[in-house]
Length: 275
Image (cartoon, rainbow, N blue to C red; front, side, top):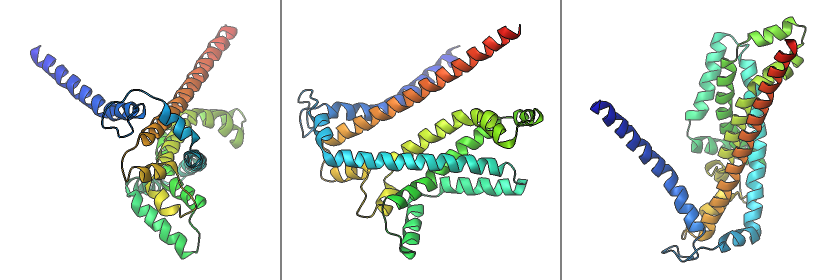
């Protein structure tokens, strides 16, 4: 009994340490964003001045819009690529699926700086000017790999008997995809989209290599701001981005829960009507 208690105590201590290491930096950033002392050497009282300052800064608003635009485009392209490639790979022979998996995991394991440098040299070789489109292409290249893994895992768990049953009932390929396959993959598509948007929004490496002089994202602005010293504005920007991210995740989770509850309720109503 004592050994079991010791193991539980050790597990609890490890969990507490992990939670502290994870949330302590977030707490420090949040406190510094409210600190009236612009040097951040001591607590000078609470204030919202830094949030008002970043909202009034046209450069911050512009870079935020640029990052959101790049992340939205990257999300759409990554999810579309993941969905189409996963559906196509299912029809490949065993050797083809193995090669597809190797290519996908290679994009995950390859350092992003190597991919960014390769794209930079490729675009320069063909005379393509660095800017918004190259950044979106670079972000899509690695975000689509994460999206593919998520969608592929869900698709492998979904039995093919649903599609076969729809085909037996006379549904064509498009209707089977729209009414059967797509709803089953919807949770994975949402998760893949959230991952792609988050990874793209806070990406720095590909953005630095592919943005040129015409595009500046919010992470690039923050990186430039902290080169001299960490200012309260940087903390305020970080808190604002975290708040927006948590709000989007909460909305998606709420919408998914409502949809699932509605589906269960519809199923129960249908069973009651049949009785």
